[in-house]
Image (cartoon, rainbow, N blue to C red):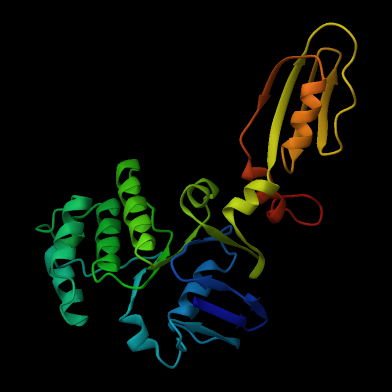
Length: 297
């Protein structure tokens, strides 16, 4: 079952299209990444899924409902962290969470206390005295504390230090292990690669790829460096190896695809030493972002 599904979802502001013909499907229980540079349409998509703005064309289904017509009841069942988090700065952290819990029918209970301890947040201080990182932790606790079936997080690791980021990752993995779903946007490849099961890639308001991370790794580049022993030249490399530099005693290149043909060639060559790097998604993702002239978008 898809927790999130969109069909030709489009948002225009006058002549400018912020999102164009988005067909997106997020199955239940996935840690799903939404990747793209700033301005790609990620935040627009999340706001449409929450019913915070109306689509120009197309439709969406979130938890089986229309987010525009069922927005208030639907949002009560979703944990949301906006990218531009704004809080009541005169309230304390404790008052903020108590207010949000009351709005939801006082559902958080022990989970709220557990998360406050996990994120080590001082709730006695006024929100206006919080650092940016403390405000982000407060927003994350607010999104997580009612154990929603769907978490929608817009750039959730902004301003978090590495230890807090690791805690967040643990919480998100635990949520999906229970069958809940996480959809979060990021412009950081390393974060998506480390955390996600699946990723959708946006560019200029269009979906240009949706795939499992494991499949993308199979398609990604492995950088290869081979040193040859003195003697007869090695056999010609297999077609999947793009050679960047070749000398009598060494070869540097990039390999795409299954490793078996590469390993068979290496076994037949007079190899003195070899280094095969792990799959590098950076080159693959940069290719998605490059324009028709090969420049990064």
